[in-house]
Amino acid sequence: MIALNDIHRMFRSDEVETTALRAIDLEIDEGEFVAVMGPSGCGKSTLLSTLGMIDRPTSGSYVFDGAEVTRMGEAALARMRRDNLGFVFQSFNLIDELTIAENVELGLVYRRWAGKQRKARVEAALDRVGVAHRARHYPHQLSGGQQQRAAIARAIVGEPRLILADEPTGNLDTENGEQVMEILRSLNREGATIVMVTHSPAHADVAKRVVNMLDGRIIVSARRAA
Ligand SMILES: Nc1ncnc2c1ncn2[C@@H]1O[C@H](COP(=O)(O)OP(=O)(O)OP(=O)(O)O)[C@@H](O)[C@H]1O
Ligand SMILES: [Mg+2]
Image (cartoon, rainbow, N blue to C red; front, side, top):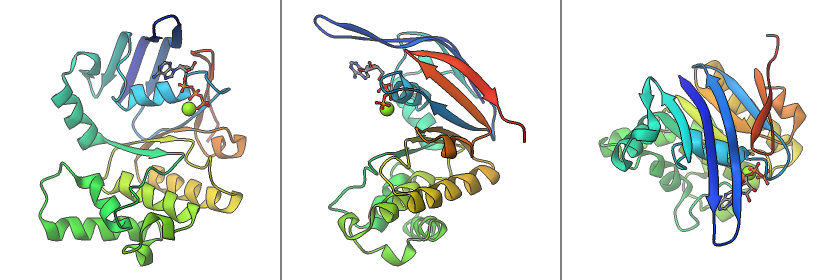
């Protein structure tokens, strides 16, 4: 599904140059569940943004389903993201002024589906993560765990093949973190490919493969025995 080849990402400002990714080679098959670990600043989020086609590498090749992503224009990238990707962030990123259902519907924003079909999809996604009873509430009226589950509903409402999660349990207590991991695990069982950044060894254990990063490089990529 994914092949990164010799990916570099440099950030340049007036005086400093930071290398966030160095010589990254990574292949991910459809259906994998990959955990990305490593110290703060080692490039995990940059790697995820690269996979998510949000951040463009400075050099190297990124092939997704046989297509060279680094050569695509903005419109083609937007289409690729819409059709294939779902994002989950540490800080939920729900919009305060919209209800939970409206937030989840944003996950369908570029899809030309009829209103009725959208509503059904939104309801199914909310139901899936156990917050359907909070559909008409606003984000601040929900607990952190509920907000993150709503954010997952937004990510999966378009039925993405690849889910990118950046420390999805980072702001949650143990119990809510477990619930989020259980949802991710079941999405993976149903076929979604997942790449998740985490600082939690226990949560990384849920993944079938752990990629360890240090200073912009992948230092270990180990598959766990099934
Ligand atoms: N937009 C940017 N401009 C300049 N430097 C950046 C930018 N984004 C990231 N960096 C730098 O790239 C490096 C990798 O950052 P990244 O956010 O990928 O780390 P991370 O592994 O996700 O860290 P954390 O665990 O703290 O989230 C850091 O040194 C960071 O300062
Ligand atoms: Mg990060």
